[in-house]
Length: 372
Image 1 (cartoon, rainbow, N blue to C red):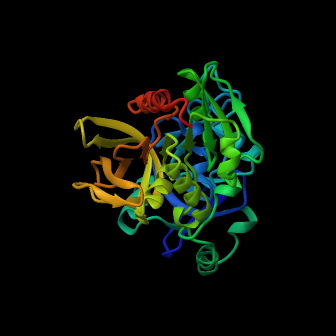
Image 2 (image 1 turned 45 degrees about the vertical axis):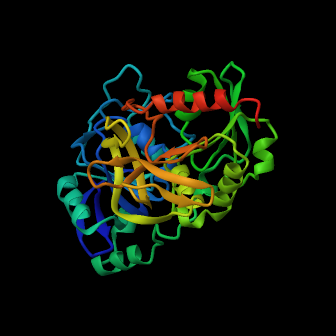
Image 3 (image 1 turned 135 degrees about the vertical axis):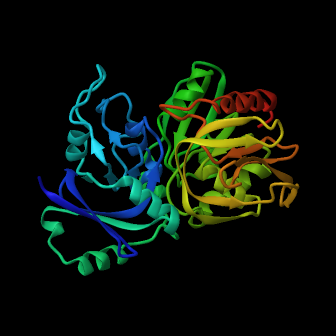
């Protein structure tokens, strides 16, 4: 069995064994709390340039298949597990997770004490990390630490263009409603979720202009999830401001939520270790209802949670918070068709508590139809 090392930028080193592709991988270390949905997680473009530590002790039980990809490839920079399943057990599986990692050249490490690693990241915060196996694992500990420290940080990382579609495409919803989607790192289940409720999606590259989005005469505009530091995405933030000024219904999730926050004059900041996983409790501040939601974000919007706030477009307010740490999880413009959430209502393989937000957006589209 080939040995491997996981090296954090604070100098801590975890021993393990090579898994997936053999070589070197560098990125930001984050931990994901999902017990299921690992294929959807690692193919989510929001995880671009991140090394994901799975907190569930055994990963890979259901293998890998063609249907559960959330994009056209695996996006994680690396994958860390304690005990990979010795073999998949699912009628839907077409290959093992290990084989998929090898096929796509993703370096992983197994037999790591992921509990200790997760506790370390919770105490010290997300940090740069390297996985080294094979010939890449021959340097001294000091050399490997320096290689990790020389890698780029996530703060200041402009990544949306790297993960976005290069050409626009349509997912037919079979009805008269249509949304233009700005792809900042979209997951396939988003246009599928729109199609299920009778909305056609036209997905545009992240660098598209407002004129290009409006060229299809959409009933509304949707901003997707995506990777990187939202403070770098000023082109997209300026586009959001134009959309709001024109009174076009607007819905944003995850990275799109952060861009809406910036357009409203709010700032964004880096979270200590972020929210990653399928079991994050979020409360609707209007109804006091609590939903279990899927998250993947290392940045958040800074906004008052107990009072309205001024924006260039009128009053805004926080609509949702995370009950673990009071992070802002939703925003809206009062009296205007603009709202956003920090989490994933389209989550596959779940949870589905927040799926009703697509219906909320559909109602806004119906209300505003014909005015654009």
